[in-house]
Figure 1 (tube, helix red, strand yellow):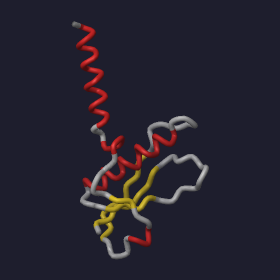
Figure 2: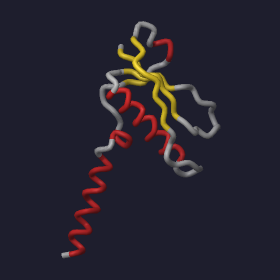
Figure 3: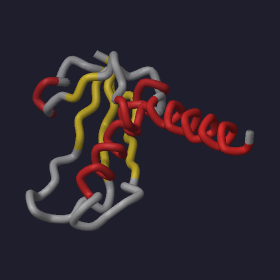
Figure 4: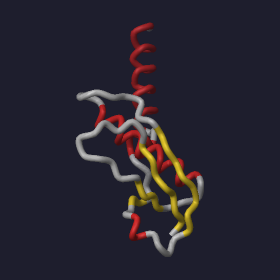
Length: 102
């Protein structure tokens, strides 16, 4: 009985994680370059620090943070985000984006 309850709680936790926009992405919000939003209305500036760093998890941490920025942009009423350019090879300590309504 305890084992099945434990298994059920583990499955529920995994499914909750799959529903997190940080893992699955945000439909309806696109990523654009700065030159593509000239006719759009700026909505907000959004930033988030990746929760994990290092050679193994850094890429996943940045991907999660970018998706959370997209989620915040959508909550603010935006449908487009322009992310700040990062230097290739440098660690990303903060993901910054500007949200637009186009």
